[in-house]
Image 1 (cartoon, rainbow, N blue to C red):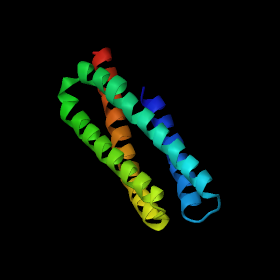
Image 2 (image 1 turned 90 degrees about the horizontal axis):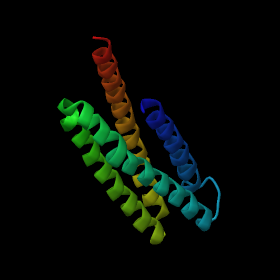
Image 3 (image 1 turned 180 degrees about the vertical axis):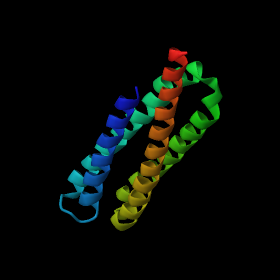
Image 4 (image 1 turned 120 degrees about the horizontal axis):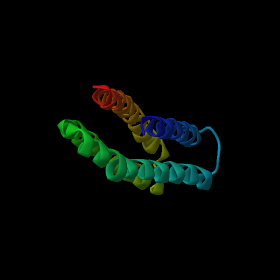
Length: 134
C-alpha cells in the first residue's frame, strides 16, 4: 500500500509541475492550461478519495491508535480541495497570475503533506511488520 501511495504522490508532483509551467507562462493556450489543471484536479481527487475511503479505513482498523493522525491528513485533504476550487475560480475569471500564486502554495503545502504521510505510512508499515514477527 505504501508503494502505491508514494507512486501516486510522484505522479501528482509531475502534474503539478506541468500545470505550473503552463500556467506560469511556459506556453500553451488557455484551453491547454485548463486541460492540464483539470487533469491535476481529477488525479488529485481520485488520490485523496482513495486514501479516505480505501487506505485510511484499512489502517484505522488495523491500528486504531493512529486515528488522530489519519484525521489530520483528512482535514488537510479538505483544505486542498478548497484551494483547488479557488484556483478553478481564478482561472475562470482569467486571473492567471493569482491562480499561479495559489497553485504554487498548494504545491508546497501538498508536498509537505505527502512527506508527512509517507513517513507516517512507513512507520505504520514497520509497526505492522514488527507485530507480525512477535
